Image (cartoon, rainbow, N blue to C red; front, side, top):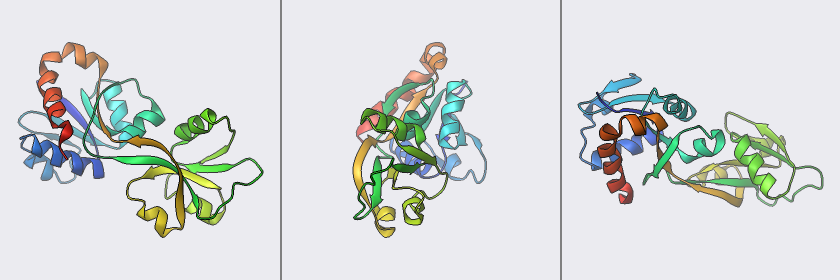
Amino acid sequence: MKPVIALTKGRLEKQFLEFFRSLGYNDQALIDKGRKLRVDTDDFQFVFAKGPDVATYVEHGIADLGIVGEDILLEFQPDVFDLLPLPFGKCRVALATEEGTQWPARKRRIASKYPNITKEYFRQKGESVDIFKLEGSVELAPILGLADAIVDIVETGTTLEENGLVIKEEIHQISARCIANRSSLKIKRALLNPVIQSFQKGETVS
C-alpha cells in the first residue's frame, strides 16, 4: 500500500516537486507524466487536481494527504486536518484598489475569487459590502467600473502594478499547506508518519 497524495496543478505543483526532490525523493515519474492525472512512483501514488478539488479528495478519503494553498482552506474550510505549512507558495491575500481611489460614500463593491474570505474580512471590520465573485482576472473589475476594489492573491505585485492597482491592506500571509484526511491519520499512521516527518524536516528549506 502506498500513500496517496493529491497535488495542486500548476505553480504549486512545480514548487512542490523542487521541495520533494530536495528531500531525496525520486521525482522523475512526476516530471515525465505528460497529461496524466494519476501517477505512481516507487513510494507514492499522486493525483493532480485544482486546489478546491484537492481539498475535496482529501476530505473524502480519496487521497491521504494533499498539497494545497492556504487560501483554499480559508475560502472553503474543508473538513481536513491542516498538518503543517510548507516552505513554498508564499504570498498574500490583499485588498487592492486603483491608485488614488477614494472610498465612495455608498456601499462598497468588492470583486474577488474569494467571496468567503472577503465577507469575513469586512465582517470583522464591521462593514457590509456588495461582493462580486469572478473567476478570471479580477484586476479588470475596478478598471471597468464593476467594483471599487478587489480581494486577491498577491505574490510579487507585478500584475497589480501593471494594471494601475495598489495594495490598500494585507488580509492574510499564506503559504502552501500539507493537509490530511482525518481517518487516514488514524488508520494509516504507520504508513504516513515517515512522509509527514520528512516534510517537517524540509520545512525550513528555502
